[in-house]
Length: 297
Length: 295
Image (cartoon, rainbow over all chains, first blue to last red; front, side):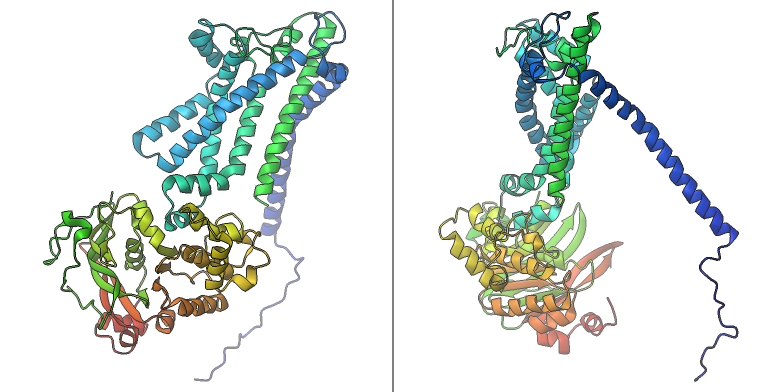
């Protein structure tokens, strides 16, 4: 059996440029699809760019050193700034972060490392529901439960913001903890680590940057919150450093007040406030991205 | 989660309640599972069965694992050899729904006794996994992890160096101990994992296909290392590579899968000196597997 297989007609060579009709059609369709996607992306980006442009072009006028260092004067007067709002926002968001992040991370650890059965399922479900709860409801809840018995103030606003942040922290931390490979836990257990040791020494450090990122986004969300604060912090024209008992201001509340009154100086300051807030949110988002990028380098 | 009832079938099994006060009873093997002349045993496995969520995975295994030698567990996929290995340091406890019955003694102590802490068992009995799994931390911290965990903080530097030397990795990493463990090559990572295990000074190292994710050269490095560790440590290795088992092990246990009422269950077929298993297997199934006619 020494027959060699020789094809009767050798395969013909076709230049690579020679394309049949079917291939050409597929090529055209592929290109069309690309253009459709490009247009869709452009359209969705358009409002974003427009917002950026409007806010910056309107806000840049009143923005400056004075804006950052002076409290808000009466609306019809020029000058002054949003110091009262800046202090209030930083104060309340800071306290809210201290309240919500540790609690949220611990809840996420519970869900990922211990959560089995109906209880964990229920917690997960209500966390999802809470993510979608309108912020006015949260404001009303804090108002009814706490503000009516005590008073408007920093801590009330912070509690409201913390409630808004909590589900975001829980869900984002949960996703990050789930990303820690199972073999890392096995390696730790194989060395005789107890479960809490595995969690604190392996799982949390590994998921750390991701948890920080998720928390940053929650902070950004809280910094832009208005409705909750209307019913819990109320607003103030002075810089308030009191922890409780006195109504507190925030950047968003000042924007809201400034935008709905008729005088131009107040409106301009509201635009500048919007620009400042957007800058803060951008900064937080970029920092979050940067931390994530460093981790996945 | 893990039930520790004695299999009623074992005629010599002591009652479960007596715990660690048991003097290891003489046990009669059900199968041809006791190799010749096991001197001092590090593990005595007596009619151990494992089930995951009620589905049996391994059926009534009995074997004595000798001290200071290399014991290889071989067999086709699903035969329960990894399951067997994971019983020896109670890693199966971490799997939901896993239940282990029968008795495993380690130096005569029942490791599944009620007053035994699984974390302590795993500390004494080191484990190396199939895929190299260094922690996302520096080489130094990877090795120091175990000692730090258990408060062995004196002379940490010496401990780390000793473990890395023991794993034949010191010369390659001594100038970059602060580099990430992940930055090493696959073979180096696996030796790092071995160093991490021996830093706790265990007397047994369990290895679950430690070279299956490595290239041939790294595999040889791991095998050389195992030969070096032999004697000082008792090593139990699961491997898919029969040549590897033949090259490095003193004794070989052959497992296979059996269909039992429609369920695939692993069982131990033959356990003997490696030479005997590979040249003069007493069971037809072993010989078929080893000569490549099955599995």
